[in-house]
Image 1 (spheres, rainbow, N blue to C red):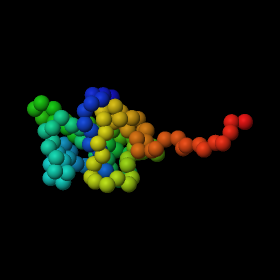
Image 2: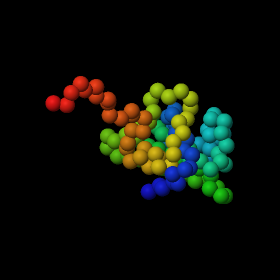
Image 3: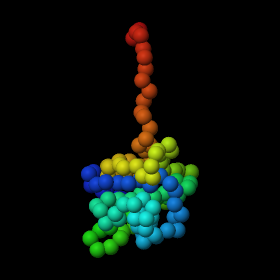
Image 4: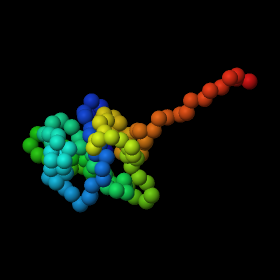
Length: 118
């Protein structure tokens, strides 16, 4: 199980990518498309069109690391739908929730406007 520090920056790339891409190609996407530094202490999260696969790329001391997870059956990762920009920044603990299947972008329970209790 991946357990990143709660304070680490995690950049979720909203646009889907081809999951045949490996660490070096995903690092090129970070540098050339997203215009970010792959060597900064951060995790870069990519998913495919069906949202049943995730790859995470990051630099650790002396090389690129690639972590992947594939869901079986009908399960899907929940990614943001209507976000401006190419990435969404989350924390390391929120990445754990994303990998567990929680919807980080849902507002939560609706507000009830009750006038009386009984």
